[in-house]
Image (cartoon, rainbow, N blue to C red; front, side, top):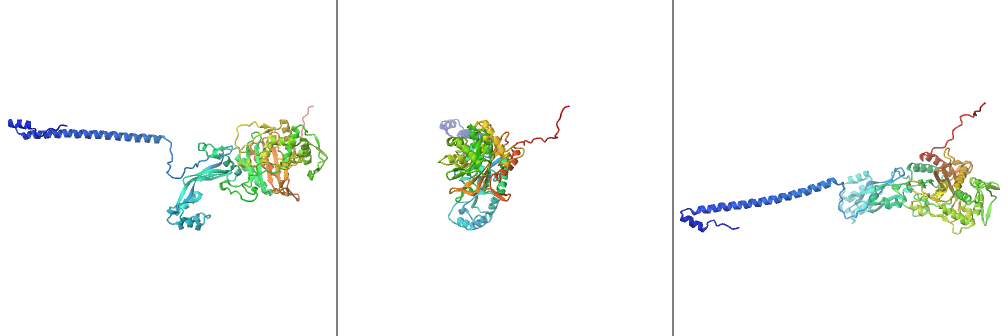
Length: 593
């Protein structure tokens, strides 16, 4: 910018020559300079205000846009910064076939301590020991006054316990958020569900992992965050499960049994509607696995799938089915049943005299060991083994439980003709209750062996054919006669046409041989016999009842009455309408003249 002199020499000289005052020129130049300076200052101020206005406009536009985006988005809980690794806490629910809740999650709190932040550690130890009697006051004092920086005190707290700890007012006692697994029905279906516990833990959350049963088998699926809203739906019916447990528990006490188990299966779909093992436990407070003693002494032991037993005469139905299927005999074929059968130092005898000969039907109905052994001799070793293998009796049950896969049938390695004879009536081979239930379901559905499942199925699977429909129907009729005329007479339930077979076997000693006064009593049933829908296999471990002046241990006196009561209770729950014959109104015959 060119500055104009305030007193330019040329104009001053010219003004003096004309006699004018040169100071006027200076004042005029000063005024003009000030005007120019004001104009420049005004322009700068306007420019700054414009820039500032644009900046404020942009800022408020960005803030308004962000607020609009946040208002339109889903709400999310802010996550606090922490050095603790993030662990998954969400776990899918488990429901029964009708959608009733069997397992879910519940929010709770855990308690931990930072001793270095405590103001009164001795008082905190004293108050905690008062709230939680299992905590030792002296141990807490040593921890709180020592050099430790962090201690877990409780993995779960009830709301009342949390409030009591909060009222202590100790800043070194802190709470951690937790989701714990809750089983609202307590011990109902305990062996199916198994239970869950905490795995990886942090102060913000803890990971839940299955430790047994379905919780363990489907752990990956249940803990998948993408499937947290999709419950695992079981084939089990909660009301039927609870009723069967109640009846079995009462029968176990009445018969003074050590344990009991039962499996209820749909013969057309292979769905397990109820599975019971007693004694049981509460998965909300799952006991620790035993470190000594026999496994079945623990309530964690699942007798229905984990235990393998010699189940006695329930096997006779398989032997009869095979001789009919192979064309070796017919229901009315007569068999020599004179005995005992002597084989080396072993003898095969019947419990009661049945005559010199009996037809195949009577051998099953009256449960003749000699007659069944004679039929097994005609079958032969290879065919007998092959048939049992087709029935699934040589392999672990494919049920979706980790305990089932570990329970392999106990089969003799040196299978001889004597083995074929003893196995034909259920001795010398140990299997699980689930194996027998699947095989009896095949008899009930017309000869198709189905893979048992604990998951709800939509539609009936094809299965593998193990016997013809004709053979299955004939065996069904014979099993019905076992109840109406034979060893399972206490199994008759009015309106439900129960068919089944008893089985009593002395328990095997761990060191070899058999106990004389300990038995496994079993009743394998199908109902209704005219149109089979379900199979119920029930077992009592070391059952005994005192009737007619003596102790009774056979299944006809122990397992059968309990199974009959179970069918009477669960029949209506299954939607089965009793088949009642109408009474005759009068003995009058209309004749025409």
